[in-house]
Amino acid sequence: MNKTFQELSNFKTEFHETYALLESFYDTLKWEKVAIAVSWWSDSIFLSFLLLSFYKEKDLETTNLHFLHCNHKIREESEIEAEYLKNFFKNYNFQLFIRKESTEKTEEALRERRYQKFNEYCKNNWINYLFFWHNLTDKIETSLMNTIRWCWLNWFFNMETISSHPLLNEKIKVIRPLLSLPKSKIENFCITNQIKFFEDKTNFDTSTSLRNKLRHEFISPLSKLWNEDTFFESWNTIYNSIQNNQTQNYLLPLKTCPYRNAANAYKWAIPQNLITTESLALTLSNLWIPIKKWELNELLQRLKNSWEGFHELQNRTIFHSHSEIYFIQSTKKFWEKELHLEKLVKTTWIQNFWKYLLDVPENLIWATIRFPKPWDHYKNKLLTKRAINQKIPIFWRNILPLAEKNEKIIFVFEPNNLIY
Image 1 (cartoon, rainbow, N blue to C red):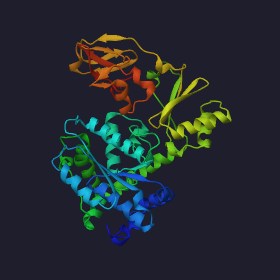
Image 2 (image 1 turned 90 degrees about the horizontal axis):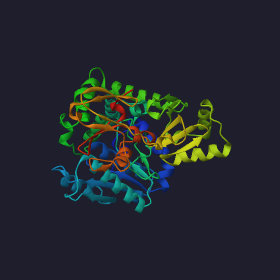
Image 3 (image 1 turned 180 degrees about the vertical axis):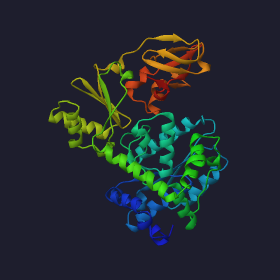
Image 4 (image 1 turned 30 degrees about the vertical axis):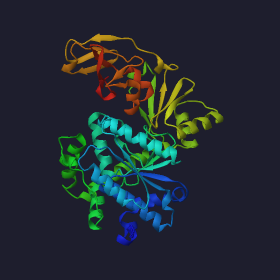
């Protein structure tokens, strides 16, 4: 790691937006310890090389950098990848987490384990910033997947440069400095400058995931129809436009049906890190919510420093759930009331249930549809914990119908499964 990006290319020109972002973090990087989640993939190696180069150019202390890698022992190449990274970062703080082969290896279980290890390491080493390598191509793929599954505007926007994460301690800020760069540009840079990286062969198998299918059968061909640079620049422009709109106190009306006769419900489309006293006061004023100055300051601190909770003002409840903010006008603590309604499924297709229309698949015939009860488990996991992982807001969790057969929950209807 003797050369830096500056010595390899005119980096400030070629990657202006990314470099400017790192410069904006200079004061943080100068004093704070930070962690970087790493793998041997091109975008991860690129990010690691970028940060190490930036630290060298700015004469910052590289002992403040901590590189974290999880070896799940799933792929044949896992050991080779871990060994390569160990050598790549041999002069730096490198932590390898190895999964015991006897533990569960579903995608969800591995993700939870990974974030658990990140949490533990960051807590033990007093680290409050965690860098991820997600890039513009990842962001576009996620937008399209969310659109297919049904989404609101923020779900289309998805990843943010600075955000919290539901599986991480609320004190930890996630930073994604590569969101303006397409993966192809990152790979080309690594190839041109002989920066070694590994490409997971399963990423090319379109039968393994929706993300792979979108990447190889939709996004890649579409980007090459006219001009690849223009294609990705257009997406960057769209995301920047959405983010700019989000800072203007946009209140997105929500379907009020699930919220127990709520008079109205809104989602506040503003990133957590951009909330100010002025923007919060203006939004409350637009919703005709009176508030005292001390209440405003207290609410501002809650919204900026946590990712879960609620605050009642007049006849409205302000929810902060998974770094998203909702304003709902309804009775107090309406989300705590349990709903007791059951229906035996005898036919497929569209079924009435409470205020929903449910599209019922064939495997649910002779199942009982009901609402959640305390301590319900689905796929060996407490429903409440599952809802947290799925980023389902607290006020929605106990009014999502589920199907039970032979005293076992076999299906949970999520918001995108419901027809109002």
